Length: 253
Ligand code: NDP
Ligand code: 8X3
Image 1 (spheres, protein in one colour):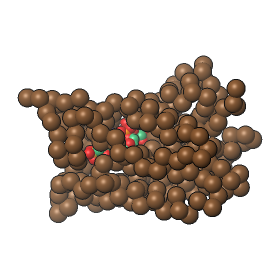
Image 2: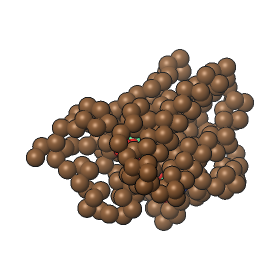
Image 3: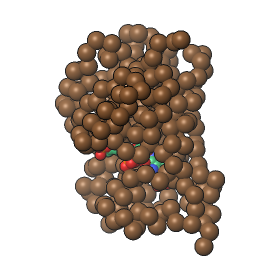
């Protein structure tokens, strides 16, 4: 049997990241789980350690120094990250550009764009040395189409799409794969965060339709991460059947 590969997942404390950690833990991966919420990191690490080797790193991707320090602290074989899943991210607010909160804009650009860059900057040199590796960036349908009030969140995910394409070109000489996965509506803590804890409003986003679940995106991530060495899944948009575009939704009333 092939030896297990090492995957580092950002944002493993909920939603897509957590579901991906669960799936990879039983599919021949060792895991480095990251996020800010220590209680959740510890609980998931303990649980998944029953299936595979798991360690966790607690850091805020917005903090460049903390991110570098955490990833630099990896010892021995854990330094050899085979698959980096840049998943940490969120929307903050849903407002027209003229009334948007600057703090929300900062959060989305700092987490979704700069955070992804800070983590990648730490992991890419090892992949270059080993002339192998795979970076999977979680974008969004919002990174393919702008929708009303989506402005800065969409811009941050368009940036993820651009960075994914740029990484694929720049890292091509080193044999490093780069994949962009762009989900539509997935029921996670995403809307709860976007609406600042307003559970009713968050729930209403998914009313009258069957959204994607985090496990659906985990399936796609596993598929991308397990293609043969000569195959890269470059770009995938994954929508619930009830969603035809960022704004076209079929809801049962
Ligand atoms: P969740 O809110 O459930 O998960 C977000 C994850 O990101 C959490 O684990 C959170 O961990 C982590 N995170 C957020 N901020 C930071 C930070 N500053 N530093 C470190 N980690 C952070 O949302 P999803 O699972 O839905 O989102 C995952 C990704 O998927 C995001 O990039 C999102 O934009 C994208 N996406 C989601 C869609 C959806 O409809 N749900 C659709 C398309 C894309 P913690 O709080 O512990 O730090
Ligand atoms: C999350 C999906 O449509 O709310 O990225 O932007 S959407």
